[in-house]
Image: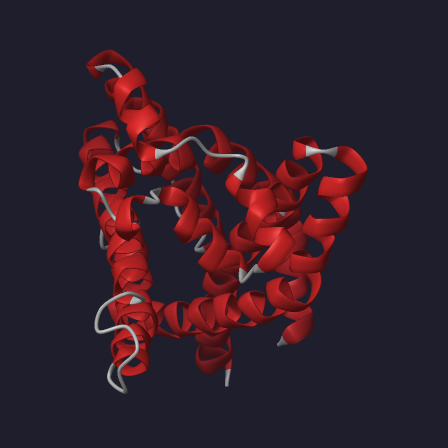
Length: 250
């Protein structure tokens, strides 16, 4: 099965699509999240930077290097116009469209009809909401014994439910939901593994790159991390599709 999944990954250009995911995420999704997080006043006024620090698992000098990439929430709100926010939302649809296209290729489906574009808008809104809620869950009842449980349920269980729903929703219900659950589980497990990889590899790389190349070095590491996120999301769905084929062939 592993060989079959690898071959399918080559066929759908998994690495190329992951790089496209990272590029679109950096120029569309992240700016939108920065504005929304600033408007909601999340993370004790620190804005989106807290989410990035937690996602990368960075501390110390690496965390400070990441912080230099982002403006304060007050600066973000003072310079953001309604037109720029609307533009970010529109461009964000291309990010979701790329995910939708990848899912369709994985399941050998034709492109969704044009009138299903509204699904991308709703998927973008739910994605932003989930990411913000997942970050907020790390600060609920902080310092208590319940906090880790809350964070696990929201990020783990919520993530599994989100990716299960996202696949079904963007595929317009053309694949039975029972076929999509293994892919959602694989995606969440892959993201957990990426988190540990980030702590051990990306965190020290950010500190050294910031010294060697300045802010651009930090951006390159963040971009590499986004490629990893895209790879895990697509590979998780691909693993789910591979498991379905294995069951049907046995």
